[in-house]
Image 1 (tube, one colour):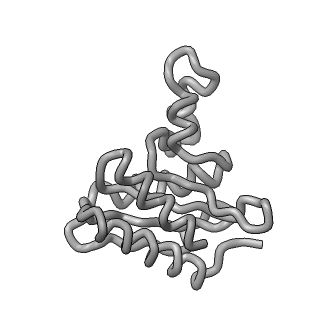
Image 2 (cartoon, rainbow, N blue to C red; image 1 turned 120 degrees about the vertical axis):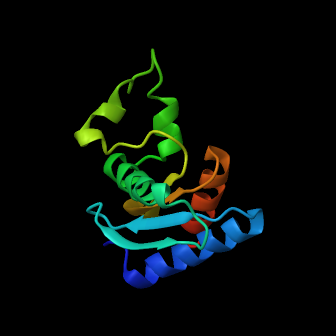
Length: 132
């Protein structure tokens, strides 16, 4: 069980709708159960520097089956995952905007969003995940 291209398109459309609502262009990436990119879109005006960040957020969320916001909260000094961002060749993203995609109680992929503040990225990612 994984994320299909149709699923990814639905997640991206919902995320982009939310980004439009808040007036912040975003990059939105969706990965499958193996952490492989299924689809990515960069809205007009979204930062090109956020393309890879959105993909890394999606990958991280799937790799650890946790939102990147929660992983970030748990990776601060004195917390249990401090230093995790330095693993996996630096691919681990520890700031808001990555959310697992769950089907029948199992994580089968993730969405990653980048282009705004952490709060903006998170709300857009959550909107995408809700459409899954």
